[in-house]
Length: 273
Image 1: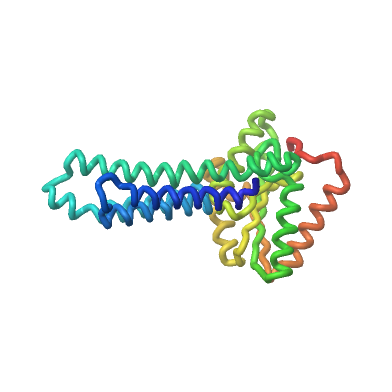
Image 2: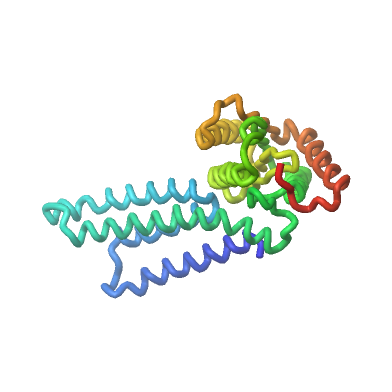
């Protein structure tokens, strides 16, 4: 199953369940605040499924704050925060957090699980995100979208200084690579693509993203990965290409990566480096 189909399925089922819960309320017609609360839950679900853990966390936080503000009059009329009111608030906040944060994290993982089930040769064994073969296909799609519809896109590459891994045992190298990949996956939108190339570089394809947006993402990844590794900023080299300005460079990168695969056809899955 393609992730986009899964996204539509989850949102359809989720929306149906939320709408049904409003009409099947045992207390009769639901309060306006509860209708708004359920609609916000749908918004949190959309953010989690479409943008992953980060988007889900932001949406869950906003929804929780809005719900608490909406319930301030109820707290005031009850002359304090009673146990039933506190329980109601806690349940709502936990629900938003569960759907937004946990749901977003699961969706981020499911995307690459689907890709592996569909074609195991497209997933890197160490990082569990796309390998070079999968990234070439993603670049072909992005370039095709630009050619047909002039859809902007950007590519960000992250190269780690070899000294970060050269003295580590293979198991520790694998753990470090998996940690960086996990950070990248959780920091970008689910509509974007992340992978690890045969030379060890990480690469992110940002759909519908001009250079200004790519610059923000590149800076955030640079700072975040350095903090996660406890490394200096000069330990990472970040480069970005954006269409339309850099479409020729993006096409050139795609062709270069594809030619490398053609030279070693047996190397379907990335080996440790």
